[in-house]
Image (cartoon, rainbow, N blue to C red; front, side):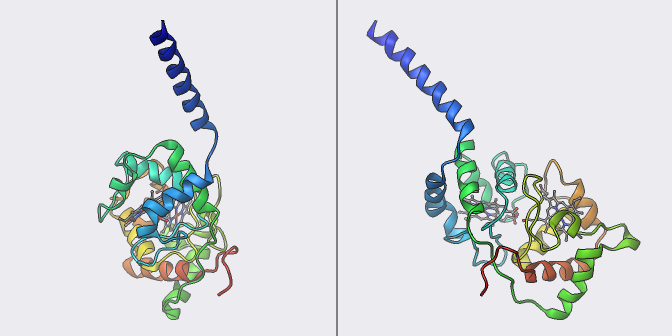
Length: 214
Ligand code: HEC
Ligand code: HEC
């Protein structure tokens, strides 16, 4: 009798747990997870000190959640093999919580880049390369590189140039996977090496509208 009641209680508690995991994000849990795990590579406030590794401060949480799920399910290319092992084992609730906490942090400011290179990248970013049928990056990543929340179009302003150019190469070689990456594969696939370097320099130098003034 006692046993049966206990089993019933446990099942009810588990169901409740599952229902609330669907519902809410927990910013405190997100911050703790960041400090325990993510910070070592992505910085204490989501700003990475390593040029090959991305910053997430101010990044849209829906984009972060989606990329974490891709890593967790081993559907996104991970050149150094560092992310997949950190995403495996995280629950949906943990992923949503850390993503929400990261979105709340102040985005990175503009990076110092080769100005001549960035000025060539500027026109690609805003106007695309019409003769190669490369669309304007601004149409999806925003006029100030701020991305589009809710559409999984990531912010790119102030991201490290080496990470940006590595990502574009990943799309071009079709190694970087996503269920929606035709958008980027077609774009990057038509760009030359030099165009990728130029537009990456420009994105790194852009000032995110919510970045703190230096
Ligand atoms: C051991 C280092 C390491 C740790 C720890 C780590 N990451 Fe990463 N993370 C990386 C690297 C390297 C990449 C870039 C992979 C690539 O080039 O595609 C990355 C990429 C990402 C991306 C994709 C960013 C984008 O703009 O597409 C997200 C999101 C992310 N990490 C979130 C996290 C979160 C959240 C945690 C903590 C739970 C975490 N990472 C822990 C190294 C790490
Ligand atoms: C039609 C919309 C669209 C256009 C146009 C577009 N992008 Fe993207 N971009 C996306 C989407 C969606 C993603 C996320 C793909 C994924 O899920 O991996 C992305 C991802 C990226 C990333 C990876 C960011 C990160 O944090 O890892 C870079 C870099 C990038 N785009 C640069 C560009 C550049 C440069 C151009 C213009 C030459 C451009 N994009 C044009 C939609 C677009």
